[in-house]
Amino acid sequence: MKSISFLLLSGVAQLVFAQTPAATMLPDGSSDNYVGLGVISEPSCELGGEQTTRVMPNVQMQWSNGLFLRNANLGLHMSPFDRVEFGPLLAYQRGCSASAARKLAGYGDVDGSFQAGGFLNYYPLARLRLSSKFLLGKVADKQSNYINLEARSYHQLALHHGIALSAGLAWSRRSYDQSGVRFDPDLTTSSGNSLATPMLSMQNQTDANVRNAYLGLNWNWEFSPAWMLTSYVTTTHQFDSGKDSLWLGKRNYVTVYSGLAYRY
View (cartoon, rainbow, N blue to C red):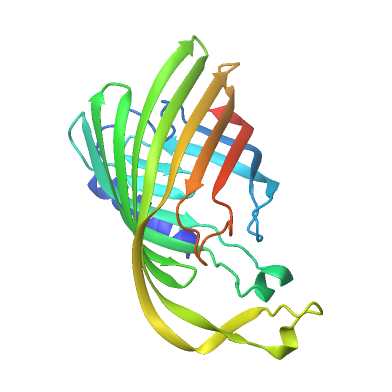
């Protein structure tokens, strides 16, 4: 399904929008096209969200027809203007397999899912981008509308060193089945405390809130014509961590990535 969607969007881009101009700044803020692999440290999806590390690919590419790929986001630039960018966007959100402890607490698996929507960017200055994206889809089997607003600036510190500073807010409106809780004597602990389990009766709920705010720093070091070190750190505050959150009970957390990339 993932490959088919990517191929279809790529084919439409080449046939219809072959003359779309390139973006002023690529998604990470730089003008570098690269494919790389590195290590990321982020909260685990367990209760409490302890930090964990994993290997993660890091991809940023843009073609002359306006099609661009940034990790799990695929988009298409359709604007003929220099300071304004807009177009469709397809995003994939990774899932999480619930452990026994997570399931015991009433949280199930969070499946990976596709979301579709669009983006709108504006450049008040050559290296300052105000961006927004709107996505529709299902997250953890809940219908969700997602909006992200971000300001990102790029700064060339030296000949081969560049950094991007970013700040953003994420907002979403979700429709889901909210379960109640009931007492289950089979799950009563030896100390007398009981664990709550979901009831079978369900009631449809909808909520809309600012989910998180974040600050980020990206650093690209081009140490040869073809190779570069890409790194970033993002600190996030969650205002609302519901059952569809991968990081349960984690209000504040830091994500750090660093890896080697081949530069085109």
